[in-house]
Image (cartoon, rainbow, N blue to C red):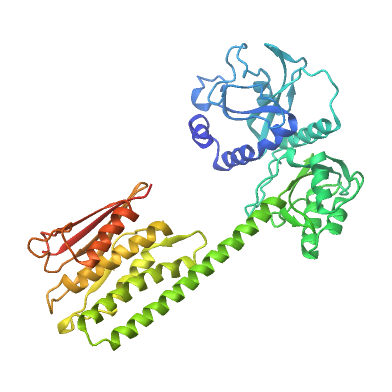
Amino acid sequence: MATLTDLLAEHTTLSAAAAEHLQRLVAEWQLLADLSFADYLLAVPDEDGRAGGEPPSLVYVAQVRPNTASTVFPRDEVGHRVDRPASAQGANPLMAAALRSGVIEREGIATRFGNVLIERTAIPVGFDGEVIAVLGRAGDASDPRPPSPLESAYRDAAEALCRMVVEGAFPLDEANTLGLSTPRAGDGFIRIEVDGSVTYASPNALSAVHRMGWTTDLGGSRIAEVLAALLTDPFESADAEAMIAAAAGTPDGACLPSPDIALRMELDARRATVLLRAVPLRSAGQSRGAVLLIRDVTEVRRRDLALISKDATIREIHHRVKNNLQSVSALLRLQARRSGNPETTAALGEAVRRVSSIALVHEMLSGSVDEEVDLDTVVDRLGSSLVDVWLPDGGMRVTVRRENRLGVLPADLAMPLVMVLTEVIQNSIEHGFAPGQDGAEIVVGAIRDVRDLQVTVTDNGCGLPEGFDLAASDRLGLQIVRTLVSNDLGGQIEIAPVPETGGTRVRLDIPLH
């Protein structure tokens, strides 16, 4: 399915600014559809398909269905032309007229499609003094009952927003630096006049405000004063009042929303948390009040706080485990120094390094908020720490470096992988090089895609001993490696010589899914 950007590039020669205006309109027009109880189709002149000096035909490039009513367009109309046969449900003869006239065109008599009467309207989309597109609106007109107060309030607000579309004033270039979501009309709808007084509040909006602590009706109340009485933070109250004043404006249109004033806020009252968005209504340079959309997010925020508390607890546990493992490592190191048996000292030294590698992973997890480990940081620290505790005879130094990125892994994969790399790198440092070898180097490489991670540990040492067989080896370190790769990582390991350098390469293939 082609995106709006692709369709605009294919059919139009609009400027980048005009295309961006249509992108913002499509990002916000769900509000129009919900308030109108109608489907909307966005059509643009097809400059690519015009012939000779004829005016370009119109092609649909976007479609939205209402959440407040049944759709009248069950099929996808995107990519179809407006001027197809009249039997097609998406056809709208008013679109071309609205493109030429620059005013809203309405159908005098509802059109019947099957058992449904459809009321159609065409709204030109203005931008920078020109008509760049047309919105086609189609709603079900079969219900003979008079509209309810909620329906009347919704439709009045929708008409005001459609007039703003014609003038190029909707949607506003609104900053949302906090990334707050957008409440829908069905979440809670409040219509306010220029002075901030409430003329209508939907039942859901009343429920949200009552949960905040308000006990009476909102009709006739000044919403800024209501919020000031409910909010516990005076600074938050002042910000809400400024937002409402900027959205409602003044009768002469002098007070217009500034990009510096947020039109979305999350408000904390004594008993509830709500998400509030203000939508200014402007027409012919004058303020017409505003629409406030309100959503009760109390339970969502409570769950968020519970997750934050749980996350902090888990990170504290990782921190304490890391401290305990470091204490165990220190005790093993102390015991190794007191031992007079070289084999015991070597075994305790290997245990120290294994415990330290596990402690390193827990240290990374104690600073992570999502139980994930940055393997690149761990490998860099692991290589330097292993080299520091091992100095082969003759003063030879071994360099451990990393090529490419291993990336981030969840803790259940990172823990065994780090233990495997510890064993492999340590084994290479201890047994992979001849005494006094110059330029001893170990390189940790990685190739990663969506499904698999391939890690290689390559040295330029003296190679594998004759007759080496990984499956038959009785060394503890290699047995640990085989067990972790097979059971914990579900992967495969291969150890082979490197003909180019005479060294050894260990290859790990680990499935990520």
